[in-house]
Amino acid sequence: MAHDHSGAGHSHDHTAGANTKMLGWALALTSTYLVAEVIGGFVFNSLALLSDAAHMLTDVAALVIALLAIKMGKKAPDEKRTFGYRRFEILAAAFNAVLLFSIATYVFVEAIKRFNEPQEIQSLGMLIVAAIGLGVNLISMRLLIAGKEASFNVKGAYLEVWADMIGSVGVILGALAIKFTGWTWVDPIVAVAIGLWVLPRTWILLRDTTNVLLEGVPRGLELAQVRKEIRSLAGVTGLHDLHIWSTSNDDVSCTVHVTLGGGADADSVRQSVSALLEARFEIHHTAIQTESPGEPCDPEQAHE
Image (cartoon, rainbow, N blue to C red; front, side, top):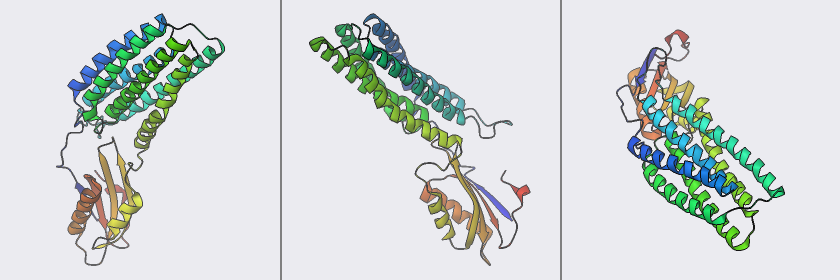
C-alpha cells in the first residue's frame, strides 16, 4: 500500500486580490457614512434611511471581518490547528449573513408599524443623505471589485455594498416621491424593498459558507464526474473513499483510495491521478492512496 501527498510544494497567495489597503479605505468611507446615515434617519424620521443604515452596518462588519480574516489567514498552521486559520473567514462570513437576516427582520416589523401609523418625514434631508450614500457606495464598490472573487468575505462585502447602492437609489426615488406627492407610506415600502433585495444575496452567502463548514463538495465540482475520470485512467480498476472539500473558497483539497490493475505501477498511477485532478478540476492539494485488488484498507495508514 502506498501514499502520495501532492501539492506540498504548491504555493499561492490565498488572499490574492483582497488588497488590505483598498479594504481599509472602503471601511473608512463606509463607517463615516454609517454614522451620518443613522443620524439622518432619526433626524429626518426616515425608516428607509435607517434600513439602509442597518445594511451599511453589515457592510462595516463585513469589511472589518475581511481584514481580520486576511490577517488570521496568514497565520501558519500549528500543533492545534493543522489547517491553519483559514476557516475563520468562513465563520465570520456566516455570522455576517445571520446578522443581516436579523436586521432585516427588525426593519420588516418596524415597517408594519409605520403602515398602521404613518409618520411625517423630512424628504429633502432624506434625499441629501441618500445621494451622499450613493456616492460612497460607488467608491467602495470600485475599491472592492478586484478582490471579490478571491475571498468569501471580500465577496460578501462587495455584494452588500452593491445592494446598498441599489438601496440608496431606492431611498432617493422614495424621497422624491414623498417630496412631490406627500405619500409618507412610500418610506416603509422602500425600507421593505431594500430588505427583500438584499436577503436573496445574503442567503447565497450563507448557503456557500455553510457548505464549506460541512466540508461539502465545492460548488462547480461534481463528485460523480471526478470519480468517472479517475476510473478512466490507465492502471485504475476502482476507487473509494473519495473526498473533496475546501477550507475556504479558493483552497480545494481531495483524498482518494485508488485500486490498481494487475501490473500497474503505483507511482505512475498516483502521478496520473494527481495531474488529472490539477489540470481538469484545479484541485492542487491531493492525498492519493493506492492499493492492490483485494488488499484491505489499513486505517492506521491514514494521510498525514
